[in-house]
Structure formats: structure tokens, C-alpha cells
Amino acid sequence: MSASREKKQRQDLLSQGPTQRQLKEQREAKARKQKIILYSVIGVIVAVAVIALLVWNSGIFQRRVTAATVGGKDVSVSEMQIYYNSVRQSVLSTQQMYAAYGITTVTEPYQAYDFDSELGDKQVYNSETGQTYEEYFEETALESLSQVYALTSAAEAEGYQLSDEGKANVDEAVASLASQATQYGYPNTASFLIAYYGRYATESAYRDVAAQQELASEYQTLHQDSLTYTEADYDAYAKENPTDVYSYDYRYVYISGAAASTTDEDGNTVEATEEEKEAAMAEAKEKADALVAGVQAAEGDKSEAFNTLVVDAVGESSSYADPEYNLQDGILGVNITSSLYHDWVTDASRTAGDISSFESSSGYWVVLFEDSYLNNAETVDVRHILIKAELTQDDPDTEEDESADEPTDEQMLSAHDEAERILNEFNALSEDQRTAEAFGELAEEYSDDSRNSDGDLNAAGGLYTYVEEGTMVESFNDWIFDPSRTAGDTGLVENDNAGQYGWHVMYFQGLNGPKWHEVAAEALLSADMESWLEELTESCQAVAADGMSLVH
Image (cartoon, rainbow, N blue to C red; front, side, top):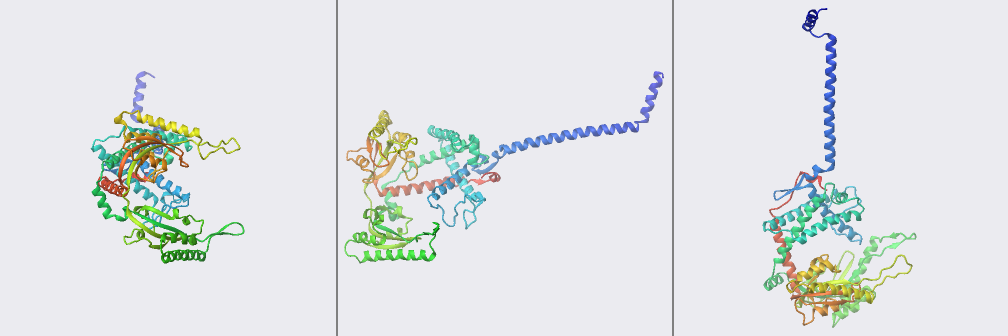
């Protein structure tokens, strides 16, 4: 076939269009191409979904979600978990601690947390309102956030910045996470944080919250230390609240009305019946009534009559049969506000020799009134650093018990040498640096004394305020009430009191007012601080956002 003829034939085929076979092949080829594209797209979608799921499960997105807002600021889930679980741990650890001693810290309508309940935080906290523990923890956490934000905002507005000591405290708190993780058996800090503060908690969030709270605490203390009160302030408080500042002398005894439980032949405890409980209370009432009537009928010294007749009510072996034990001497009214007999004792019409009984849930109190007065005894403020003498401990590898209740001479000498070293460290400071605050810093660093109604005494720089003569151990008392003592005096005092063997490094801060001023000062300070905080937080109320559902 010639070239021109072949060309013409191809043109004729093109003009006629593709054959059926060709069309089929084209359709199949197109279908195969579409499948390849479809599978490729599906593969991409699946890959993206897997990545998104992994990212979601990692918590990266959830941590950044806004859980609350306060003062126009968004608070992340990660931060809010620290606040929430700090409240949760504080409440529950307190309940557990007291429960170990058979004491409950909640009363109706509030319910104790059941650690075995499958409901967890969703169990009811307030039976009257139906509020759950989860809601209570959340509410309290938001209140804490409001206060912290209000304080930090006020501090920043005044140009106050976290001190170097505060920064060091934050660093120390963060650093301690690793040791806590190890102590409680967690593989790393991250897993410890998640276990204690929630799955979205992070170390950076923990640091941020710790820094916020440290700044808030410093600024609050700064304001508190700026508050001062005058004699007129104290007098005005005493006039309005006489029962709080007055001291009271009285004798008292508790006559138990609890029915004794018994055991059956198998040794099982058998609880008393209702009839037995009623009989026990009736017997206690009879004894209380007899004591009251006997003292009222007695001529002469009512206290002597009380100490004689109380033996019939509780027996000779009872502590209440001891005249020194049943005497409550110089008790401030504010310290007995929760007692059944508070209103009776603090009644302005009460006179020496008055006696009455008060029924409790499981017995009767009988109280003999002796005196009431405004305690004008002068007081002092003193700081100290206790260095305890180390006691010999038992060696578990030996059969004999080598533990000792008292230190050896060498152990006391060692404690003395350490106390002297600390005193020399203080005295080595220049005269203008030897301040009460500087001594307090040494107390925080070295003191072994943690006795304080609010927790750790060392945190208060070893300071005792409003110390009245005769209330401390003899050696301590004699040093601080030496007539020659002046502000800034230092010294060493031996402590031979059981359980506190060692030496005190002393710093005499100065004279203070009458003992009753302590009550007035605390009350005035508390009221002013509360009012100040309320004013600060009024415009900084934290509000839960959608992300709060991720907290807990």
C-alpha cells in the first residue's frame, strides 16, 4: 500500500469515530483512573483523621481550650485543672486525715466524701441543695481563681513584682514534682501531674499557677503588714465585743452518757440497744443534777465543794477529779464560742459560784463559774530557733531496743554547738542587718519547731506574739521576762522539756500590749483583710466557660 493511500485510510477511520472496542477500552481505562484517584483521596482523608485523632488524644487542643474567664482573661483547661484539683486534694485529704481518728469534718446537710463510691466527684455534697462535690470543687476553684487574679492584677497595677525569694519558691515547687513522682512510684513528672491534677495538666501550667499564687500571697502579706491599730481601735472593739476579749475562770466536768458496748460468746461487738442508751443518758443526768444540787447547797467555798463532789460523778481515776485539770483559768471568751456553755459562761450577769449543767449528744457538761475579767497582763513578742538534740534510734539489725527518750550529754552538746553556730551567723551581720526579719529568715531555714495553730511556725519566722508570763517553759519564760531584756537582745536557752530537748536561739522582739489586745488585733485585721479582698474581687469574678467540662 502506498503512503498516500495509507494516509487516506487513516483519515477515513478518524472520520468514522472510534470503534466499540476502543470505546470499551477507554471506559475501562477511565474507571481505573477514577478508582486510583478515589483511593488516593480516601487514603489522604484517613491519614489526616489518624493524625487528628492522635493529636486530640495527646491533649494539645484540650489544654488550650478556655475553661474560665476572669477580668477579661481566658484561663486554659490546663491551668484550671491545677486550681480544681488543688481544692479537691485539700478537702479530701483533710477528710481522710480526720476520719483516721474517727472524726468527721462535715455536718448536715453536707455529706462526707465516699471514697469507694463509683460516682466519684458526682456524689452529693449538700443534701439540701443537691450540689455535688464536683460542683463544689468547681465553685471553690473559681473563687480561688478570682482572688488570685484580683491580687495579682492589683500588684501589677502598683508595679509590684515577685521577689527573688518568691521566684525561688516557685522554682522549688516545680523541682519538687520530680521527687514526688519518684516517691509515689510514677515513672516521670508528667505522669505524676496527670494523676494528681488531671489528664491535661502540664508542668508549664503548674509553674504559671504557682507563680500567680506566690505573687498573690506576697502582695496580700504586704498589705496586711501595712495595717496598724491604735488603743482607741482596741477599746472600741472591746466595747462592741466584750464576751470575746474577756477572760473567764471556771471549773468543768464531762459526765459521759454513752452506753457501753458488749461482746458475744464469739467475741463480736454487740452495740447497745436504744433502751440501754436511754438508761445511760438518764444515769448521767442524775449524776449531773446531783453535782449541781450539791454545790448549790454547799456553804462556803463552792470550788472546794465542786472538787469534793465531782468524784462521785466521774470516779477518782478520772482526770476531771483532779482540781488542776478541771480548772479552766484565763480562758478567752472567743476560744469557747463553740462550747455548749459559751453563752452561759459569758453572760454579763454571771457571778462566782453559779453552776449549771448542759446536755450534749452523749453526756452532760457541768460548769462552775468563778470569775471574768479583762486580762491586762503585759505581753512580749519573741522569735526563736529550736535546735533539737538528736535521740539515739533503734538499730533494726540488733535484737535489743537501743532507742532513747532522752538525749545524751554529747547529743545536747552537739545541739548547743549548732545553736551557737546559728547565733554567730546572725551576729556576724552588720548592725543594721541584724533585724527581726533577718532572724526570721534563719528560723525558716534552721528551726525544728513546727508548733503553730496555723501550721508551720517556721513560715512565720519563729515568731511568738502576745506571750504572757508563765505560759512558756521555765527556761524560755525566765529569759524573755528578765527585767533587763531590751528589743534586739539575743541569746541561747536550754530546753529540757520532754520531746523538745535541745537549745533555743533567742531574739527578743519587744514589748506588746495587754493580752486581750491579741483578740482585738486578730479580729480587726481579719475584718479589714476580708473587706479589702471582697472589694478587690468584686470586679474580678471568674466565670466557667465551655471548656470547664474538660476539667475535673
